[in-house]
Length: 221
Length: 322
Image (cartoon, rainbow over the protein chains, first blue to last red):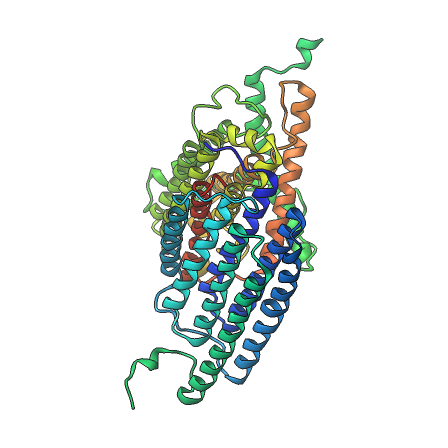
């Protein structure tokens, strides 16, 4: 029976849990559009978490980071992906290898592994409670599950982007005062990934007339 | 005078049961009234469930020749079960009353399950296809919800060190940090979804429709008539209020309960519980209007998300005592 964390820590944990729950929601979202919107929402929550730490811990750099990540991850990236989706005329992913319930159970088992793995690390943090670090690990692992279990380009791109959200939460926990340059470099990494995935989506859709990656396993010259 | 204004705990316990028994049709009536208003209908009177029950008790009972005594005994067993559960949960008081500690949350869950089982058995016993379908579906989905309930109980047990409903209510009341800790929030959310499933509300079941193919709980009672049907309907309303009471007085808002056996504070706790239950009922009515019913085979997905929340509650607790 552990004592409850302080009200602030508890609330911050709940926000971090929200990031994890949106990750699970992406896993089950049948529409590609709703997946992109969920990603935008998740990024918004991560941004809110950054602003929260900036206010409470007086880390000025985080304000700048929050603004950049808001513009990039909430507005720009989802907007770009939605525009790319608008060109392709597929709405439903329909690409799940497994049923929704079994996907959720697998992701649950994987995130349990993440929770216990981080729990055994005994990391202590001043900025955010350690629970948030475990949640971040779970977010990253569930993003991997999303990439593995859903065979369409959009889910895989969104899975990769949301993986970056998990990393953001983790870096907020471990090193809230990370130099701004490093954080912004992460974000620009993301931008490169968006360009790459955008090109893949385009090319793949043009060639295969579908967003599903199931046809990619044929070795043709 | 002081002795006069304090009520014996046994009487308070009896009042807890009476509140559930007599208040349940009122809560149902208000919910269906609000629901009708939201849909632009005038809706039934708030007291309509009482009139319905009175009418059904006066009607004759028709029993199929193919059914046995189980068909008639089951509604009584279910009703008695719903009379027992209010003894175990904090309906009016913050402290345990006589017999209040004879069962924990799991004990209450078992008694509710026994009630559900006997109603499903009666439906199967009737020999009518739709009642049998309802019975078997209710058992199937009941079994799927069970793990979620267990994990909610685990989360509660981890947070409080015991699984008595009174203890969790006291813990939640003790500070805001207990209210916002993620383990508690997730467990409460999971229990909310469980209540949604167990009271047969919209994402799972339309409780106002007459289409038998979509029915789960409703279909079980199709063959009953007269007084047994009245008992079943009354029991369903009581089950709803019991689940609301657990959600409100244990998880979400355990305030407004009587801290002592004073007559005034116990009397005040009754309208406060009914008021909170009606507010919660309005939330359910709004959900009813916002969402459509899930296809039968999609219900497992809904239950899976409730299970997800409950398991995350336990996991978050282990990772840093959230």
